[in-house]
Length: 152
Image (cartoon, rainbow, N blue to C red; front, side, top):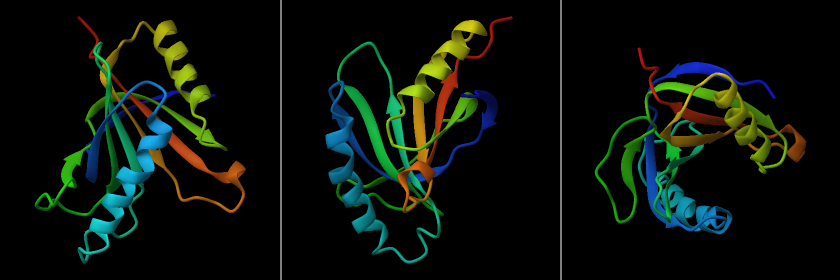
């Protein structure tokens, strides 16, 4: 799997935050995302064609802080658990995964790339989910790992 480096800009999101223990993201995302979509559907013009985006804030402490969100066109006032946020900005290692939603291969490729290029993660990763296809083999998910700036 190829890994590219991109300078990324923030993407506006409507999100719900959850703290999730390792291995439990799979059971946490749908209820959170259902809240986001229910809100977005009540806000004319807030969503046009944005994708689902999951942002992870990594730290040495458990649990993992996650933001399960949807790309939106503008900021808005928080409503219940749904609030406006953005993806991180900066230099990121990026891998595109095609197929099932098991993204292990993409994350492993990014980890190997960072090791071989003497780069370190900057504490945030995120996934942008493309439009689902009838055949899961056609699904596309882009994985981003924010990189620490290089030291002079």
